[in-house]
Image 1 (cartoon, one colour):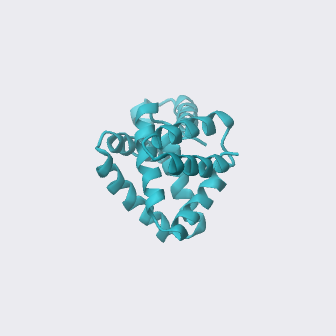
Image 2 (cartoon, rainbow, N blue to C red; image 1 turned 30 degrees about the horizontal axis):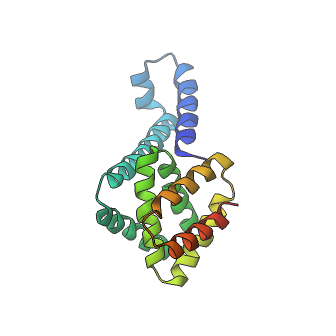
Image 3 (cartoon, rainbow, N blue to C red; image 1 turned 90 degrees about the horizontal axis):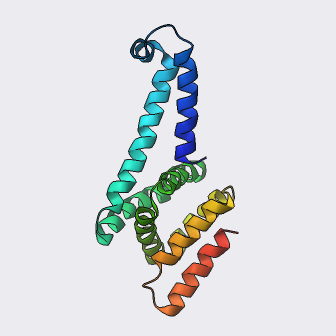
Length: 170
């Protein structure tokens, strides 16, 4: 599920809960444990998007440094935790506009090509599992971001990287 869809689901559930209450929204949010949870989750999702937007606004080397720290963290996690963390990042990334998304994907792609094969294969395997559940339009958007991210690669590297990512998107 994308972050936007998740936020929409939270909003609908909270609207239904608060709308059924005779109290003001303010009182309801102060007292309802379910809506407090919704509010915390929505805030966390919004922060993820804001972090990615801030990252996209930075120069490439700064983006790579920030994203590199996240990738190292992903590699330290075990299977299900790693998949959840990467899914969270990708869902937030999907909420960015095309330009911002392309900038973050550029940093991610560059980093994936710079890390050792063992780590790259681990992360690409998780990415393949995650992407398998995506609708075609989301896969197409990711493909376009990869194409843009690899424009400055020399011909053979560009073809190789695009082919590798295209296999994931099938």
